Image (tube, rainbow, N blue to C red; front, side):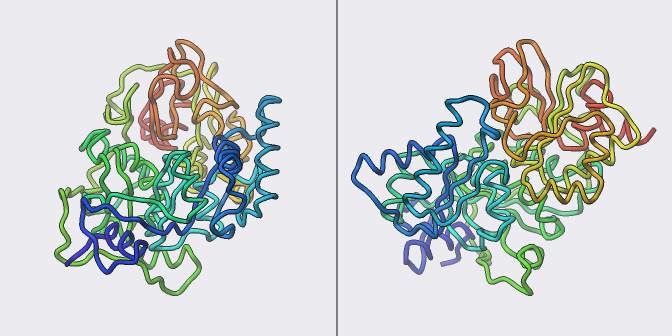
Length: 418
């Protein structure tokens, strides 16, 4: 029986030769990740249940990334409790505050491999599909069970296939690709389905672009968002080749969509839904109070350099706060070396610590009542970045940077062409 990538990964993880969409399986988890928002609760619950050791500490990752640095005494105490749990349980993979965002660190530091089944107490665990893995977010109860047993149940999802043709041309980016998909199928168009990306256009995608698309698969309701591993994956992992699962000819798909990447232009998701997508040139006259560049969606080196190219020799508009949070310490070091951070600072940007920061309304620059912000992050529902009375526009790094210097939401070509 021909299988999709998601089916192959779940078949292998559940010790079966084949599975089909709709079946329920109990699968072994290759990696389990939790971060500072939920880690203490998860580990406290394990203690309450009398579970004093993890199923396999080397396959457990803990990252302090959402509240970095600790904005309150209560959060500082939370971080302290997480560190105590990590030491007591001998957690094998631990990244403390300031190292970066979990969804950047795990791929960046070599913890994600093609074909892995990864769970995390964060919905954007789908990010790991960029490297041919099946990653998905789970609740704290599921994580408690998985940390105790190493296993978790799954319903094998149907798969929607996207065939990409053509290539992305700057200033259009892979953020615009995933926004185009959101506009095409809607925010629930892939509910509990796997998204599988292929075609010649997918092969041309850099890993940074794949991370962006896979990251936002969950915004479409997807269980997984997977690019089958190829030579770009191998190069990212520093290897000559990789042996990852690929879809079989004749695999069954719930739907197949074709998208010509060469036809795309910079896009913007309007408040308050990720699928309210329009061309950046058609937004109208929308002044902004804040522009945010960062998050697990678009805080990588390519993103910072794209923004720096837009603002080089320009100045952030009066009254606009331009916040930049590199996705990891390594990204920050790379952007310092390339000059991207210097360019951004000279233009008037404020550099924040590597971490999630404003993306989820944690700290580091929130929106107040009635304010409008444009962000390279992944969600724009009311209250996501502060006040429920604020408005959030989602866009690519280039569009965010262009809007910062224009003082309003704008197509980056209007800034760079001049």
